[in-house]
Image (tube, rainbow, N blue to C red):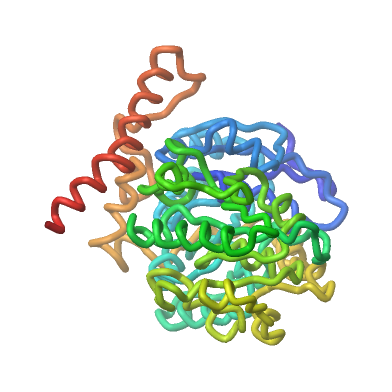
Length: 435
């Protein structure tokens, strides 16, 4: 296959969930040098969170090709394929494994693609761990000025090269600025794992239903991420759909799915615990609240919004509170409702153009190696069927053809058993342990 020209870019995006596919594909289009004709090939990493056809349709991001692969199969493909840019939209451990695997796959090549990675949303936990697992990519994208400063401090603090940190913004911000709707619509953006306990999730659901009863003139929507049995970036043990079956729901209360942007088109008040949807909402200047009912805690992620002016409780909302965001805080989060958003990706585009013009790039050099992390790295690589040098382990699962009917049935059964364990068995065992 011939190498790409300056105006024709071949981009590969490897993602392990619906939200990361959305981030990776949209990021690929945002960071491509100006006037590039992009061919986007999508690869979905096989695992517990591999998105379903419904989830992919809801995300609404299209690719020229899209297929499910194992990590080893992806590496085998990338060893020969002529791509200009590779976007790794994965959890940190998978990013690290692919960086080592790609380094091994490309060791005989004179030229290699530019490798890009980053985060799908707000970074509120495991900052050092997640960042060091992403170190080694040519660009580690930071979704805000605040993140860029934190990322740089972590890398420099351990003596790692921080030049890969590149400030951008979340790639899915956009939409029309807020205008009041009739009826006034309140949307609660649910999260799969925040809060985690059944008690806390039931509390939030009951307060949302109570708000609908207190304001019968309002439309109150519970925006759900996935249907029972589906997985997103995080595991959902207590789906709101099942909890709602226990309640007598008022006529002005509804459960909704769909593209978040389309839901925000009719939103007058966005309420959540710590969802990235809050940043999408703030970008449009929609009144936005991060709930304090369960506390302001690192485990909930709402601590990230300290200083935003958007923290409030259901009691305050029931009484008519209207949030007023702090403009300086908002600006530091990569949320640029003043029009600067369109230039947020310029630095990344420029940097990638420079790297592409260089032709031959140095080998990938992650911070973690068998020398710097001999007790940590081998385990991460082994989970993805790679040896400490990044080569595939003997017997590593890979597929050169589409799985046959029997294999598809077995795979669906295995996923079903896993999800049943997560959503039914695990909560029961946890409750028994609390007795």
